[in-house]
View 1 (cartoon, one colour):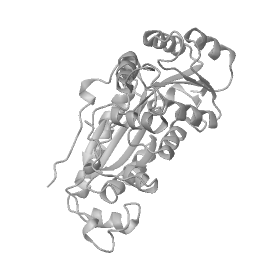
View 2 (cartoon, rainbow, N blue to C red):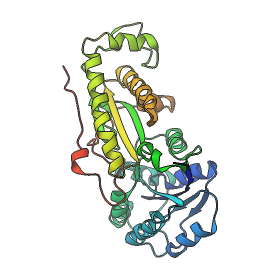
View 3 (tube, rainbow, N blue to C red):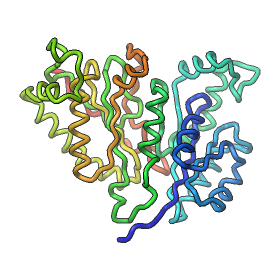
View 4 (cartoon, one colour):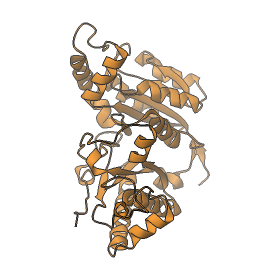
Length: 333
């Protein structure tokens, strides 16, 4: 079928201090018309009057804020075949938000005279339905600014406005993340795999300072007798669940591969998976979390330990079905 142009409309919401403004700035740099906190009744008018891609910031400070009205506006926009509306929700854990407010000496907009923690709790309650309905939830707790910007560029940049019905099966963006288990599970992960049982290049002095991006490190990992069995089983599972994600209306799927240090085994597997999925026509992004943190000067530490449930994406009308929310881990040998 011939392609049809669908103008992207990105509604950005979330918790104050979680990065909503940074997301809007990144979208504006990509050529979106960005409008922050317009009155809710103006959303339809903004869309109707504009011709460019549009990014609209909405949070609890928005005049007349009501989460159900925001969702109703999205339903109206999704009924217009000329538009491609998406809801993005920015989130961070309470300790990170408290630290950010302390560093900037700002008051929380929902608790100007009270404790910041009270404002955070109130805002979480007010926006909970938006988080559950979001097409993409971005956890910025341990996400450096450059990585956040890159994520937005990968998912909302480029010439993605032109699609055809025949291409809808590949409208899903598959995000592959390598990480270190001691630094915590990526909260946005839909599926988590544990590669710690494979041969570890850390114990080879010549390979230890290098990464899984290098061919000889990858070759070392692949010499493990169980590597290809493990890799094929991951690939086969994705071949099963990714088309089902598309059927359920999911736009983003996040697959996390973990090892001990997040530098060798998990990085190599992510690179191989990315090549395979791309060759099959899936749209793929790659993030090597520990390398991103190292390049930004942040410690991987012990981090917070997320659950690994499907926080990073949900159905437009509600949370992802429980059957697809489970983490899948290979046990350490």
